[in-house]
Length: 444
RNA sequence: GCUGUGAUGGUGUAGGGGUUAGCACGACAGAUUGUGGUUCUGUCAGCCCGAGUUCGAUUCUCGGUCACGGCCCCA
Image 1: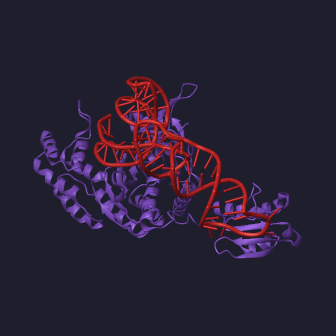
Image 2: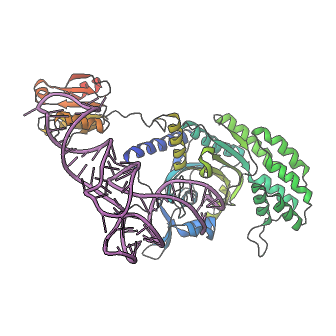
Image 3: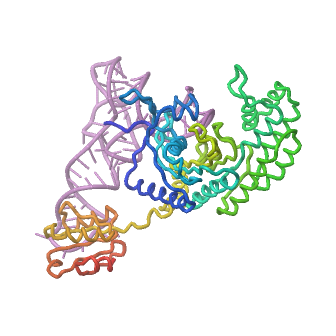
């Protein structure tokens, strides 16, 4: 038997119902903040992603050539396509742009729980406005979304790549990659700080001619933990270092205050100056959301301020701010939470509007009920018609099996009397109702 | 990139070098030609793929594929 390709998934109606409910919930949040949905192609020019992220990404791309030999690839993420679309289609639109998107992305890598070769990303980009307030809008939306989906166990970590970068370059570490090295000294330093590798950090400072005693304040800075109150100590540490500006820290303070005013309070908010997004186009505030119970694949959302539009000839619109939400991962977290709490509703609202009429023509010609079925559907009712001519007992079983909430039995006797028998499958109550759309809807 | 475990009807599982391969759920049909979720009966449906060892492999060995984990990485 042919199986589905490695790292992909099928979604049955039951699962899809949940996914649609989740997508709609996210979309509603986005719309309330003024974000509008866009969509881009599933495949793009290969160049779009190599330009943004470098040649290194090619190994994880589903790349191919079309019949004209043009190098293409399935998209590995959605930020670059949206930027491309802005440059191509939206140059003259009123700024700032608030865009949301949702779609499949593809990465050729080993997959596991919460990590698939075909995965779904929901995200937003705020383009054409920058600074602490724009950043706060984006973070506040992320918090509102997670709050709305009912997830309880999560924490948001907010940082600012500029702060640590300024401190390090202020000390004299270079942002340029020396010959023969794989990364600039400043990136090495950030990695050592992130991993807690003090020896590596000290060796690095020494080899760059920087007094080793600077390692201690850097370490203290990156070890800072806590909420918004962390800004104070950070300010003290930074003030003790030579040639370091406090502007970024001031901005972060404004962002945090604005977020607190705009969004519900998250279960846990941490200011962490070592939050580093993977790629270097992030220029300012960065943030991520972790679900601790998910272990190694626990990062469910990540974003920040970045500069990408200069690649498309629109440097004036940089920096932008946005985030991507791991649709599959959040759903996994919600499912785990629902299981733990013994709830059947995983996504808020997924069980709403489940009413469905199972129409059972009994010993009559089906054509006699078709107009009624059509009218009920036209009025917005979900109506499923028994198509196999089952006897009454089996038909009831069928109605039960498809999850109908009401059965509508119409037999010869009913036709004579101009009625149908409506039965509520939950309560078992049955009543005769006149054979008209209005009467039936009224009786539901 | 490294590494551990596994693969039996549609689903979940038992078993084991020669078996009518067992059980549960399921779907379908009947008991029940105007009323479901219970019950009874019947039917449907399975040893991942390839090679090797063997008189004989679903079982043992190797390879592949797929699945589930732990690291590394993660736009």
